[in-house]
Length: 265
Image (cartoon, rainbow, N blue to C red):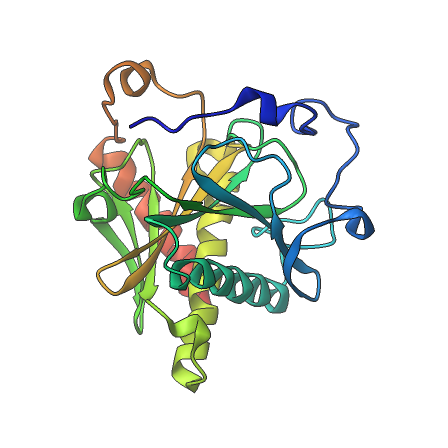
């Protein structure tokens, strides 16, 4: 079943990705309504523009800094944002009100996002299983790096393509008080940041200006899938055919990404 997008609900939706100079609603924190939870600069709230039927759409504002991003945060802020986001996502899952709960991030004009201000989205689907079309193969591939229980690979069977990086950690460690879990939850965030920086500044000659970051719980693991965004291939649009870069290119990316990840040790 296709998700139903209600165009009328999108009337007045701000879009400073495509219309620079548009006032940013996330900078005006005093004007925010329907806040669910707040921790420092992180704010989780109901999405004002409920464009998808049979869903609960929420937004997670990551920072008070309009021009910041997961790729640029200092370690303390990065770790705080990731813990807060994972916690909010888990709260919606634990409510058991939804068939599936998806968390993701759009960044840049080709990502599907409308606002520059750093944020994620957490959406509860009443009638749709967001994992229905996924397989474990979409999260497997060329092993790039492992430290403790945190691992990184590059998909050889991507969901869309051409280049998808998977960062994986044991599910639930971000909420744990155990010292090892806390340290590895921070390492999970660090590895995601390294992947995003690589995507923006080095992969494909640093040409990417947009990325997506998707989160999944699968087989006792939490997986973050990061990928650069380009104009979508007609093979995928018309035939749902994913594409993947040639093996030689993937292995070059793997070696270069590994060199950056090894600085985390």
